[in-house]
Image (cartoon, rainbow, N blue to C red; front, side, top):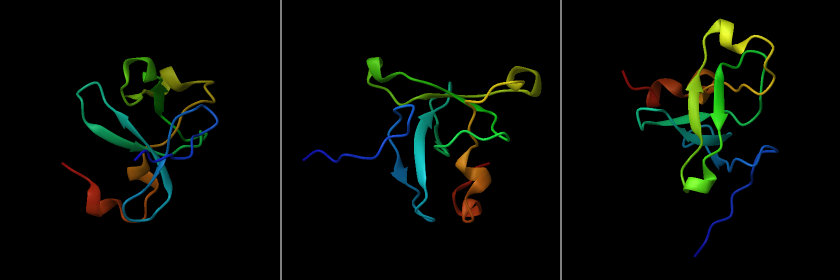
Length: 92
């Protein structure tokens, strides 16, 4: 059975957050760790997503520094920043 999830305008699939039920994009960092990312770009965003569907992989999440984010309008926030229940999920 295939589950269809809504996608963002950029085409990234979303799933509900496990605690607040807001939509999130499950991305993967360069270290292979899963990272929940808010689907909508924001001015406060510092996470760039790279599409890797051609590799059958989750989007690659890259956290950018201040100089690299200047002028970009496609950046999103980690859902750990915006989720009201983030302390339940955050790892050290």
